[in-house]
Length: 98
Image (cartoon, rainbow, N blue to C red; front, side, top):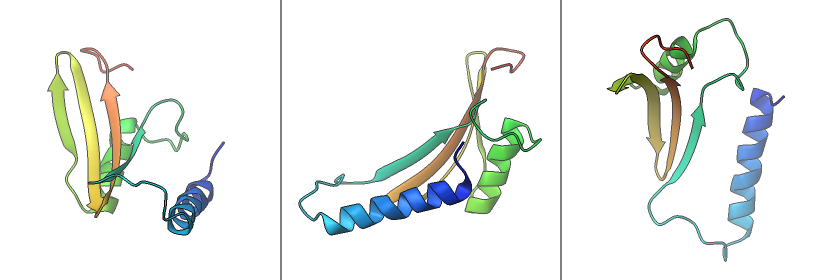
């Protein structure tokens, strides 16, 4: 299981790698870091919706809520030019069960 420290170390290692390899192509506009909440995320006792709301608060942005058919999409994202960080959760079906 990955920890927060593992993710931070991985991001730093990726940045170091990109910096050390100037011949490596990078996206022309943005690099997207995205995560989708579900059973693979650490269980901290909060609902996925509450975790997205907490991410939105930490990012300093409003949480977006969009209904698509019977599904509800919760997301929060922030751009650190040219990198975008986004967290999403989809509650499937009318009852919201994944």
